[in-house]
Amino acid sequence: MELLHEAEFWVLLGFIIFVVAVWRKAGSLLASGLDGRAERIRKQITEAEALRAEAETMLRDAEQRQRAALEQAKAIVAEATREATRLKEQAAKDLAALLERRRQAAVDKIAQAEAAAIGEVRQHAVDVAIAATRQVLAAQVQGPLADRMIDQAIAELPRRLS
Image 1: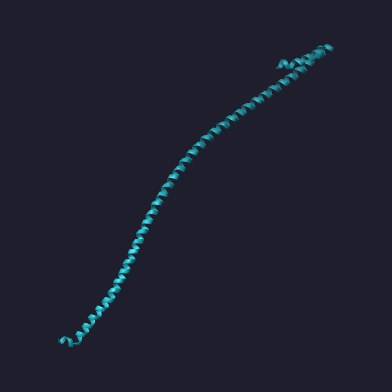
Image 2: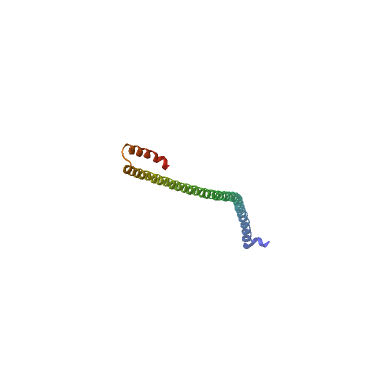
């Protein structure tokens, strides 16, 4: 029992009591701090999982939209190709029709010019024949008989030249 009289014993006992008291207080504070931190970490993990799930959903949606857009783009390109082919064929048909119309117009124009030239030549031949007939008849036939013959010859010329 001599220990009870020594100061080091009482210092040690006081120190142990102090450490136990501090340990209880600090332990509960430390435990509540760790529990709070653990709870915050759990909340963050839950939020992260929710965000991950949302991100995966958004990724799937984006991939579906991308596939749909790609399909639509392929359809548009295919339609544009078909339309270009159709327009090319139509343009070829239109060009052929235009060339045929122009060829026909040229043929018609040539035929009209030929008919006009033939008409002019006939008219000139009629004029020359009438003038020659007048000169011949005027030189060979005279009087009222000559006038009647000239009129009759002039009247018959268009019928004979046709």
